[in-house]
Length: 620
Image 1: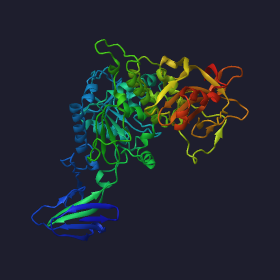
Image 2 (image 1 turned 90 degrees about the vertical axis):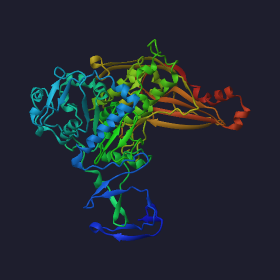
Image 3 (image 1 turned 30 degrees about the vertical axis):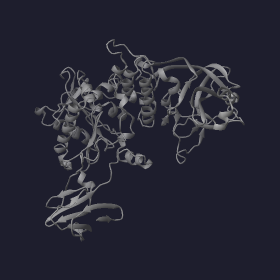
Image 4 (image 1 turned 180 degrees about the vertical axis):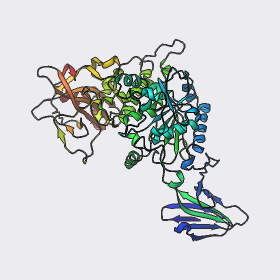
């Protein structure tokens, strides 16, 4: 028997004999009641089944083959009770069952410079800031990731309040998110908590640079990181409601004196989806996910507890689960690529312990280089920072992680020396027409004082040409010189000088036609989220050939990738970047059969190469 309710939900119930449907109206609402009459066999029901207490309040249980034992959905006042126990079980299972997670957690020698002690009973609930002179080396601690939201809490550490905070931080000075984090840390049995606004001396440039350089260590070695997805500031708290408030009673089963109400809820909004509207819903409900600093905090942390409005989601290197049990090992929109967790041991020659060259480990190296471009930069580039100078600093922990995977390379304002030609071929994501208010602009806004060849110089999401196998790639341009100098001699400091010189084929103008080949041109002009780069009609544009992708199949296809450059100084080969262009030619099967392959390529690109000159270009 199938019973369809509201034309949207189908519930399949098998009963051996008679089934009747009546209407029940608890609380004034109309809810269908399915009555099952027993006839020697128990009815088999496989829906989202719940039980209810005497008042009809649901204690929801989710039953599936992978979750045999029911898990109760918790109330908000049980956040530090059953939710904490659930989180402890997840962490324990991770450390006991996941080899990769256990191996990374073995190194516990790191201790942050400052931590908040939440366990001193003599303080009567208050907390105190301690430095590494009084913290035992290797002490476990919890880290917090949250939205500042333009709010500076009273407990914030500054040069004036440092001594006071190291004596005592009154409970009344902590905003709600910090209070929840303290309670949850205590419920986990952990003595220490790290919160940036308390553990870093604010408005102290020297301390900020020192601590910013430790972000990888701080989050990498935390016992667990609490991620406050729900709140828009530290005043919001970790959670606002309980799971039973998200469910709706849609039907009820009854058998004799027994009743089983059935409840439904919307899918997890963090579940991976190709629906373009899902990203808007995620940003609306989880403002933290649009913030640049928070990106590396959750990516680097081995174990993460995401606090949504109503429940907790656990994520480690190997596993994902949520309190209600539905999300076990399913894809999250805040997922992590496995390659970022590889340590440099995968690039070492066994017993020798020497770095493996790119040639020896080409496949792994290409995967890591591609992960940086297609995953890290693509996701991070569209995120927001409050201070423009933090644009690259907020990615510093991820850069440090990848530096371990690329020990012989130099990090260059968001790009890497070993794959620089391909890294330079980034393209700005297309602007929706409704957001492209000003159309074309002669000059782009570059608030970060970075060179035009770095994607980080623009507040814009970026992407890269994706290499889809089976495709060959030939890098044509060569790097003559590439270097960056930073204030304080750290890649997290402000950039003071950069040099990029490339040698390759430079072609003036963009007029290339051939009646014997089919060309597909894709032009991607740079933009600053407020309009696209416009080249004045009287100004020459130059194309600089970077690399080519080619595929051999029933149709032979080649795509060339060029930088679009504009000359900055007359009679000097000094340029700035304005965009990228892709030229694709396809040779159909008939042409393939009649014409020699090498001559075909020569003819197809003859017009494009006719006016190119081998040139060394400096790009600023």
